[in-house]
Image 1: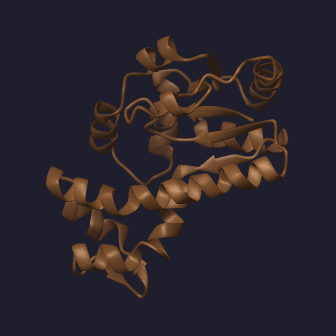
Image 2: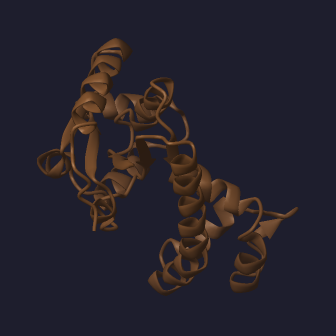
Length: 199
């Protein structure tokens, strides 16, 4: 089973590309969705114990938790020590299920793949990209953040040009869904011929 890492900066179209991989019959592990699930279940008691007052009604209050850890590297490390082992277990279950289903290729959708060294745990990396203009337009159109917050997020992420330079495959989402579907078909055909490369 070959593992494709899917990544791309905010607003590049990564979530849409992940959906199109699923549409093409490829199992996709969504790291963000897995964190959401942990924040509504398994991770809640440990997070409340470490950061009292950051959960309510059996769920993590993401805004309160974020406010508690965002400017405190030690708190962020403590949170990662709680969440990362649980995430690892959920990812392993995903791989085991995919292997049992004899899936030839799976996709792991990880926003900070390069930033966390995740490229070593996959066989090839797909980077999703678009123009900076479209990126800003898409994110600001969501209405959930302003330009300053967007700039802060982009500053923490590896530059798009650097991601593209390191990528095995690039998906440009600037021209609508059909070219992305066609690109995914091409990538899957190429990946099927590749050897496993992960460490």
